[in-house]
Image 1: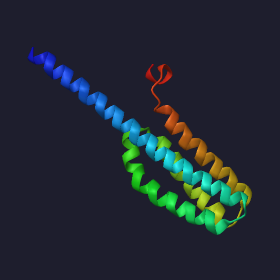
Image 2: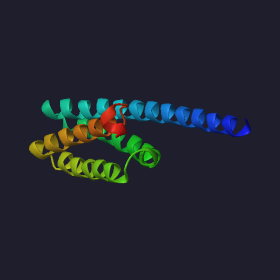
Image 3: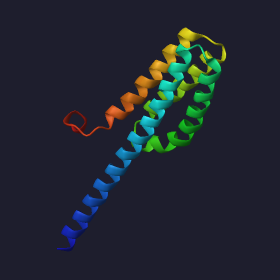
Length: 126
């Protein structure tokens, strides 16, 4: 009987941790997608100073959350996003609209990809 209680308790703990990790991941990804969309909109309007402000906010939050996110997702995903943030910062700094738009779109794609990897569905389970 003791073994069953321990097994059920561990199962419940694992389920709760999974629930909270997915919730945290979705919350942070939505926050980053919102900032990325604001960066894209600013770039489309030609407002590099506004895009730079949004990017600084993105960078600050990203480097704060990336170490926690790397516990839940593959570190290559985190590295790819970090690399794209650096690429985007240089494109905005030198006011290269084409490169900045490409990087901001890639950044959004990578964040959406991370979020989709953690969805609970059969494809991700098997």
